[in-house]
Amino acid sequence: MSINIKELSFSYGDKLVLDNINLSIQTGETVGIIGISGGGKSTLLKIVSGLYDIQSGAISLMNARTSADRLKNVAMVMQNASLFPANIRDNITCGHKMDETEILRACDAAQLNDWIATLPEGLDTFVGERGGKVSGGQAQRIAIARAIAKNAPVILLDEPTSALDSDTGAAVIAALASLTKSKTVLHVSHRLETLAGYNRILHLEGGRLYAP
Image 1: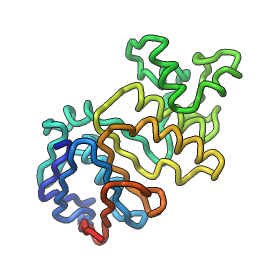
Image 2: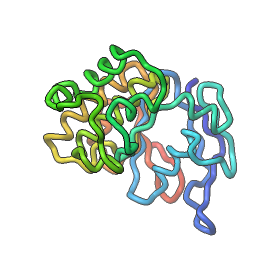
Image 3: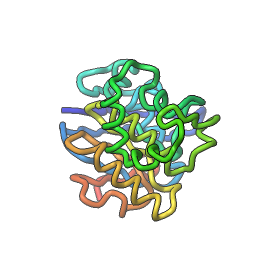
């Protein structure tokens, strides 16, 4: 089993956001969660990933239970790509030593190579503060290349195409297909159509998780 969540609850102050969540996801399974904006979907992913600590309940991810160990086993792509004020290469490798062919393979899978080939500095191109020197679609594909290069067994997706136009979104969707192939996937969204073909789709409403 890749992910096992038991009796998970989480609050922001007095506001209960997640209420006794139970969810088991098998290795290689793709699971989508639908819910309104602000309904706790992103919070759930951040707890599963290890970015947020557990307040109540328990999570096992690839047999890892601590936040730090869970974080090692996941790759996460958010709605708005978080880029470092560095070049494309360092944004993909996160400063870790990585073979050039491995970086280029991740870029190819993320639909980046054609664009990078047009840049005078190639992979050494500076992306700006918070990715300000690249477009939203390019930033998202860099984030996907980073996730591909990490090669984690579990992929967490938080509405990765919702802020993009349809043309750019299509390229990102193709990149996501490469990222999620043969992986365990948990994908949260407020649009049902983005979860077409998933093994299971659940609803998060009022802090509780429901089968349709």
